[in-house]
Each structure stands twice: as structure tokens, then as C-alpha cells.
Length: 173
Image 1 (cartoon, rainbow, N blue to C red):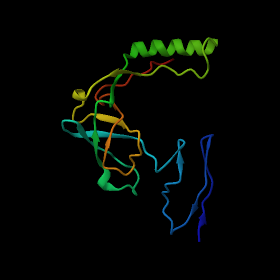
Image 2: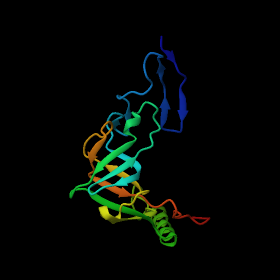
Image 3: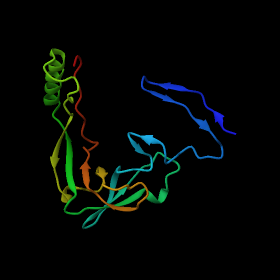
Image 4: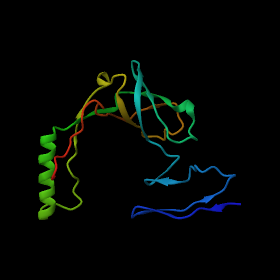
């Protein structure tokens, strides 16, 4: 028989309740995350472990023990329609100045409260030749890629190198 789990308040907007049934797996493809079901995956993060003429082998690190381990290495096909961009940390002084201007504009009411804050990174167009082994990528597809070994990327974003420090805010900002 299912066991009723206690309710947990996690922050202000999330409340979790679960019926735990030892005969039913905890993971469910019908759960909803961010407006999509857990069965609908269209973007992955991973590290480049191999590069061929028109494909990348991306190593995915899953936190779900129910995921198929044979899918930890994905073959990402790249074609002429794949958009490739690169993120780079923004100069900290520029970012701090943008953040100060944004904060002032919000406080004075001269911009909408839902206006996005400045980004700590810059995004520039890139190409397949700029992708290197060891790069961390976010790869997106137009189809569900949850359980496919090989797929064509619609977008690839090269993440900033972990050796570069991300912009830091100075005290008082």
C-alpha cells in the first residue's frame, strides 16, 4: 500500500507531496518540469570528448539514477542550419556599470520592473571550428532527445571556460 509522505515547504512557491509506493518507481515520465514533461528533453549540457568532421561526442553527466547509462555519450550532428554561439565573461567593470545603471533605472521607475537585468556574459556568433575537446556545451534540438543516442543540434552554445573567473560584484552593489 502507498505511504503518504509528509508535505515539505521549499521556499515560498513550491510545495511537494508524494504518495510513495514501493512497487512504482519514483521517476515518472508524466511529471511536469518547467511546462514540459520529464519525457520531453530538448537541451543537454555536456563536455566535448571527441570531434569529427560534422559531429561532436558530448559526455552528459546525469543525476538521475534511472537514466540509461548508454546515453551518457551522445553523438551531436552539426549541419549548416545549426546556430553556434559562444559565451564569454563580460569585463567586470562593464558589468558593474550596467548593473548599477539597471538598478538605478528600476528604483527611479524609468524602466519596467520586469525588464531583464544585464547579463554577466557576452554572446557572439561562432562556428564549428571553434569547438574544442574539453569545451562545455549546451546543445538544443527541435525534437525530443531524451532517449536518443544521436541527434542533429539546432543550437550549440559554447560555455565560458571554467578557468576564467566570472564577473564579481564589488561590495555595496
